[in-house]
Image 1 (cartoon, rainbow, N blue to C red):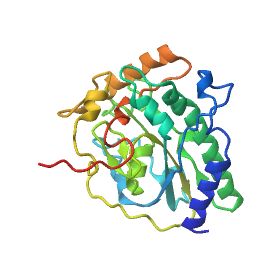
Image 2: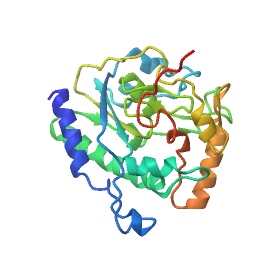
Image 3: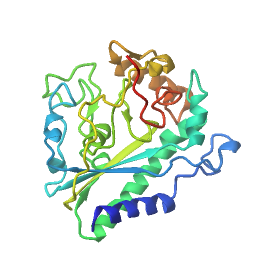
Image 4: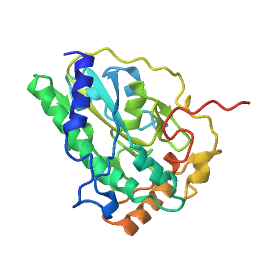
Length: 282
């Protein structure tokens, strides 16, 4: 089994796995029936022993609670990261939004995530059937979100401002060569940042993809468009992103659009929505 075969399998699952099209039962409104949520994914491969996984345990990156691939799966050899960009229908609807997320984006955040979980479980089964051991951290019972005063009490660096978990899809995608961070803390890939990530750890050794960058913000040109787009005023050129302000806004959206939630205004209507933006002239 090689990388080409794996990518082919992922693309085949994307074509056949149910859930990428909004059904009549799910649709917020009739015109959204048949909405296609995600386009064809980008796939990146990282070595499970890449030194950056251990670096993520530093409190100024992810935190000491971050579990490395071999902690999730002792036999881990490779981490496969997938980025699913939203379709133009989802992005264009949210691009027009100014104060609240578009209904299409809400479907992308909720039904879209449900679809990704179905797809990754189908991919996991395929590996299992081929005698390759796997772990999907986000669906593993050990996966946890770090919350001050609730868990991870053994770490003094956990504060009320901590926004983290013991596996980060964006950081994994960075290692796998898929992109670098933006001011809004989303990851900018060659297909932009408007989309969602998911990953799987496998016991099969595969060549790691090169990282065509050296810095964590190389793809961000600091244009400030996401600052203007953020309805919660949670992003600034000076301080970056305030996760608490963003989280409070998402909670408000959750109450407003229950059982769905989301926002994504900082990911749409910006130069990095669907591509790596051009560098600004200095």
